[in-house]
Length: 77
Image 1: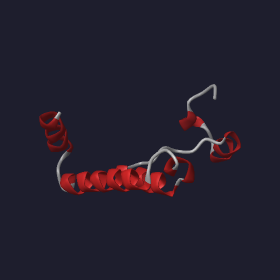
Image 2 (image 1 turned 90 degrees about the horizontal axis):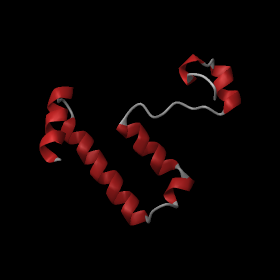
Image 3 (image 1 turned 45 degrees about the horizontal axis):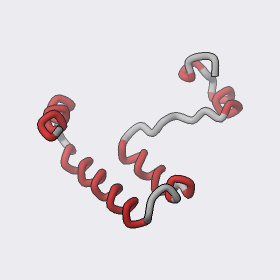
């Protein structure tokens, strides 16, 4: 693509095979779980564990402000 994808019309995006990135971690996890290609990259046990940890992370951050979320990650890492 030779220009900003956000400037493409829906018809142009379809013709070029451009799709939007997931808008949330939950959406990304759902796409990961649904992808037969991605599921081949890891064992079922690892995939299940990874998704469970990330969903717990989502739950732990629920209701926090962006500043509070950043502070939690800063303190953890």
